[in-house]
Structures are given as structure tokens and as C-alpha cells.
Length: 130
Image (cartoon, rainbow, N blue to C red; front, side, top):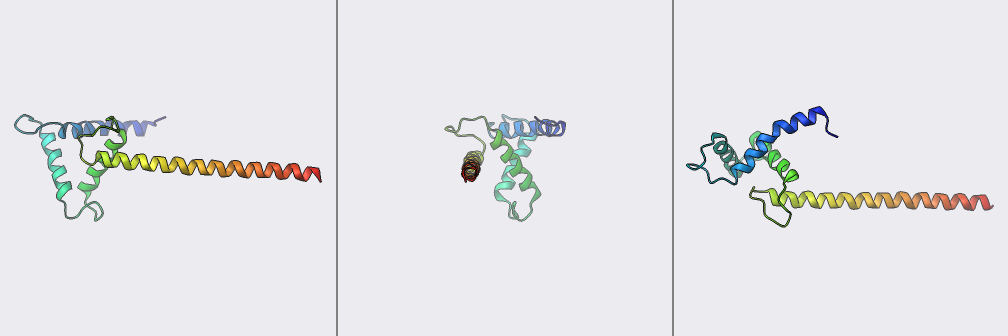
């Protein structure tokens, strides 16, 4: 269940995610007269050619990468299809891999707990027999 703070963040990000989707599906000027679309394309060009990069602290790149990551988490394009937004497909694949790894870890942890409980239960029965 989302808290009101999460809901507010989601509402604030929705226009940015929609603009991101629009930006990479439109052909740009002169067909598109949206100034925000042009700005988003400029930010993407900065992201591609930035010498500072995310690792070295470029705030523009960090924010754009965060927006790309949010899109990848919520992307509605089927996994078998290609998303028009750059970096979305590899990011979705990475998210899927991490999700599978987490599931495997959880399964192993649950199995170890069950084995531990079974061993303790069997040990308890043996102690009663003595």
C-alpha cells in the first residue's frame, strides 16, 4: 500500500515519464512543437556525451538515469518486444535477473529454515525417547 508521500512522488514523476515516452516516439521538430520534448532530447544528448558521467557526479546524468530506471521498472512493453526508450531493454533485463536472483536466495533461505526446523523437531523426538 502506497503512503501519501509515495503517491505524491508518483504524481510528480508521471509527467516526466510521459514526456520521456513522448520524446523517444516523436520525430521532433518541426512536427513536434513541444519545448519540453526538445529539452528532454537535449538532456539525453548530454547524457550520451557527458564527460563527467554519473560515476563522477554529474547531477543531470544522475537524474536522467534515475528517470530511465523508473521507466524500466514500470515499462509496459512486453519483454519480447523492444521498448523505444534507449537503455530500457538492458535495464529491464537486469531488473529481471536481479529479481530472479533474489527469488533464488529467498528460496534457499526458506529451505535452510525448514531444514533447521525439521532437524530440531527430529532431535526433540529423539530426546523424548531416551
